[in-house]
Image (cartoon, rainbow, N blue to C red; front, side, top):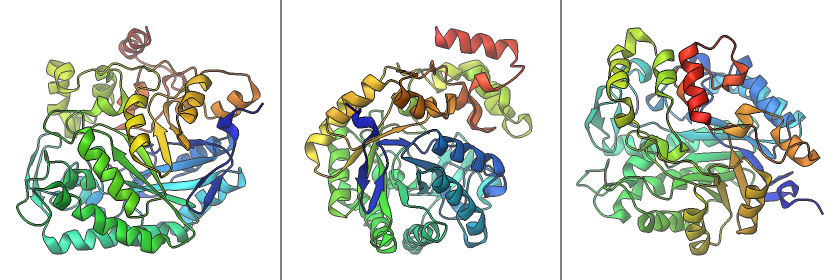
Length: 407
């Protein structure tokens, strides 16, 4: 009997050939904020490797939403390059999705070419930079920018969009009481804090029409005491169901406060510091050397680490849900589907081996060879996301860090 992993599934108007979706893990391959040959080669390889859909990651809907120089910014002038990418993915039999979001306060003037903006003002220690509170007219315009980004995604040939409403980026910054200290109709109660999300979803669903699948990535908790907890996050998910989203991607964590809650395991501090640009981040490299483990504490990894939390959302919602978090084995993937989830998202297993899904289907593999050193994560903030086994001449200190983590 064929495994349910390899049966078709439907997200809104879009049918995927199987349940596996390459999650929107940041590639850092969009030099000058536009598609590169490397981005094309990677996603077409993943499509050829057997996934049902691959997701182009962390695309800014406006220039003010850029966190990195290697991050996509969707705009009219790059549509021909994006169309080439979607054509390549489709030629391999997979569907193409693009994650759309805005980083909010998680950037620097040198990257976004303006004073960083957020739900509230303040100072972002991680950049470091001062952050300006968004004016009401800017809030409405950013919601329209999300809708316009969906229209551009359709023009470029994408089958689905994934709206990023988690991980402490702009929509999440409005939702979380930790980052939203406003005293107007966009702050205070949860109902008010959801107002920006509602504006975004109104624009997105109108732009999506009847031919674009709409997924939304949401937090099941922020991962720390002053952030959103599960009860409020379930209410956010129920509101997204009411607003017409076709599927939710269930995640957790806050990049500025609890980053390893998202990915689990240990951040490879030596790798992270080694690849940083000394000209711009000398102060952060020094802090990492002194207090790196305090700044980015380890969160224990286990296969399917979000599953018990995700089951609470499955019980509270009727809509399709996509599971992400620690999927590396066929057995765990089947367990997730048996629990009532429609799709399976993964990244690290597909960074380790783009042919992973085909090898699962053929019986060549039952589990990914990824051993969760998180080298790819330590590297991706400066260079392209890549597994350590694809990198030649690694410095001895990085090799030792990898070996220690994999033990």
